[in-house]
Image 1 (cartoon, rainbow, N blue to C red):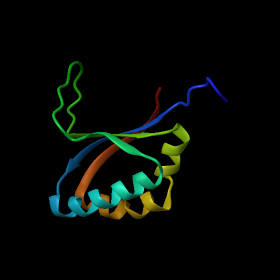
Image 2: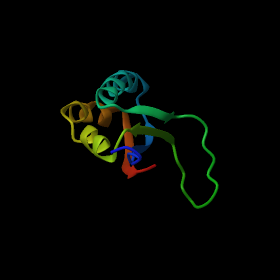
Image 3: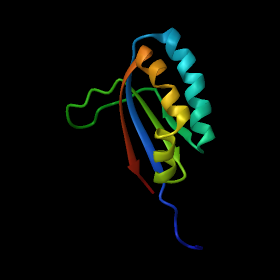
Length: 101
């Protein structure tokens, strides 16, 4: 429908990487899986500065998808599920999906 904006979907991840070697393997595979579902990175690590509250982020990653449903589809996909063991071997992560604009 013309004139109706699609609501984006975002995956926000706060990670603590504890095995860089395994993470290097995971990083390549997660990009392939994410891109297969139309996702792209908006932030991938980098400097953070807490402006309010007691949050102590480690490594922040933000992925954007064309819709909230596409983000959900990615998280529930075979490609993403196949990476869970590898992810567990290299990092601790807190992950949320959020609708955006």
